[in-house]
Amino acid sequence: MDNLPAKPAKDSRVNLPKFRDKLETILNDCYADNIIEMDELEHRLDLVQSARNHGDLEKIIEDLPDTYQKRYFNMPAEADKNSFTPVKPFNVLTSVMSEKIFRGLSLGGNFTKIRSVMADTKVDLRNIIFPGNKTEINIINVMSDLTIIVPENAKVHTEFHSVMASHEESPDINHSSADGPVIRITGNSVMANIRIMTG
Image 1 (cartoon, rainbow, N blue to C red):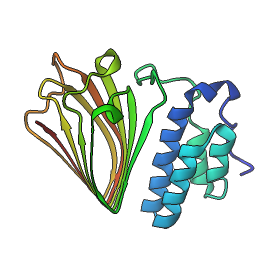
Image 2 (image 1 turned 60 degrees about the vertical axis):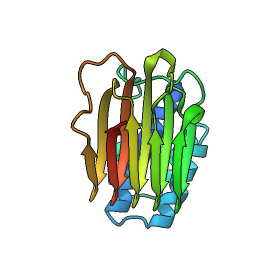
Image 3 (image 1 turned 30 degrees about the horizontal axis):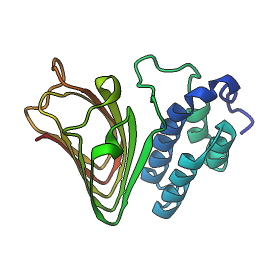
């Protein structure tokens, strides 16, 4: 810990969701690298979601090897101008060892987290009016089958960090021009499957 970079600036607390996302990626990498076990990963991901400030987040990784801590502390404090800013508190939807379909109002904000662990999960984004006509779906997909259904006229951006995982998209998914909502799908997939399709 002696050689770790300076901690994130305190005035960056407004960007706490961005730091949560970064820490979730680091924890999933720790699991993939056999640093922590599955039950420990799930426990720490729960702590990430309940964290109220940067101090809470730092405690979650303080016992991990320096290599992983440096990745967190090296993170720029400035907000990403290309990221979506939630206009209301975001939802966290969880599917653990179950079969679930998420649709409707629970997905109607600008930012939603989907956590699927050893599950068969479907996320239906059709027939939803998003604030500003855009939304971000951030996923943690561990040993699960996750299907995301988007509107036919949606413009879809995907950005995954995958470890021993597959990612399939329907050939008619639009990544450039479209007159429908802008849907950004981000997150981490570990030993799992992700399918994105229109419907």
